[in-house]
Length: 284
Image (cartoon, rainbow, N blue to C red; front, side):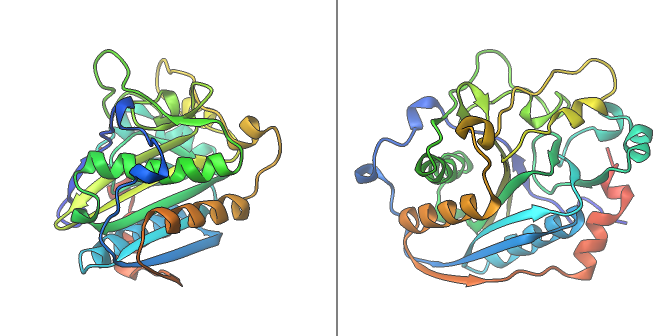
């Protein structure tokens, strides 16, 4: 049975203020040179395999390397945040009746439906980016530059007024929480983090098409319609995984100096079994 001891860490979705936005290439912070590994999984993997793979990269990052992974999900999957009360917030019987694949992420945040999207993961030594907030903003700046290169009018969201939305507050794409990437006021990218020892993991969804209404369909009680948009809507044309992955990889190389190498990633059977186990997925 998976336990918190197996997947522990400081979990957050904390983000920066509007004042921390990218202001130009001349002002970009330059992290120290490091070995960066680019991983592109275009074929798609099941939810448990994807989460186990990201978890494995986090452990490797603690040994001094950094990773940018761009990937897909096959079959489509509903993921819950690390601390989200899934059994109280979502109708498990309806999820099963619809035949939805489910997984609980090792990071924070709220539920996300993963289908027509590009998912990114950055795993790196914590001191490479500073605080979790600084990492959150820095990574989103890189993604935003890639999206702007595609022609998308994106910006980083400022912090909303009022109390923060907790893990039981509904879908990840219900509203931006600050520092996230929005287009025309609607959320385009949702991200979450975890820190484990000397390394951190941040991963998130970049919506190529918008299908987040599935999350609200399986919620118990009242729900908030996702205030989300998609890249194809923003650009008014179809957008492929390969096109977006190429732009993100180019933007990352431009921002994060170091030795870049393309590689692949795997996970252990033990980690995969942990994320497949319903007692972990529905532990809350």
